[in-house]
Image (cartoon, one colour):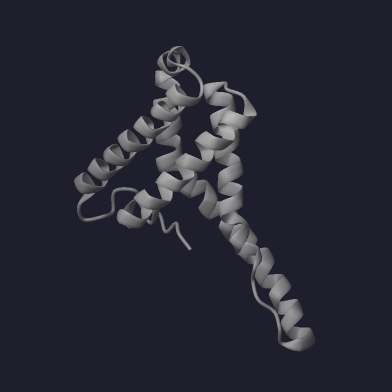
Length: 146
């Protein structure tokens, strides 16, 4: 399903560009928050983290969103049966789960303290939202997105 797009080369180029941008952001933030030694020692893991965040995190969040949407839809239907006031708010937890997954990945892949992991995760998530707004094809390549 990944390469069913008429122009898979363009998708791969955008994927590489987004991975490079996220890698540079994470590297610079680790360099500033931790140390030059830590950033240099963890280059491969920073690249791996950026690739996971750009390619795999949207797929995982899509799965979480599907489950939360199903549960939230059922709860909304129960509320609708009672007083016609049901709405699915559970789906809005998906970005929070995304942040928590990103936080754990940053903490354990780069091996830094929790306080610095929070800042790196927040900045990375902010950059990802900007990238996915500019290049929505990266986020919607498997039907991901809400």
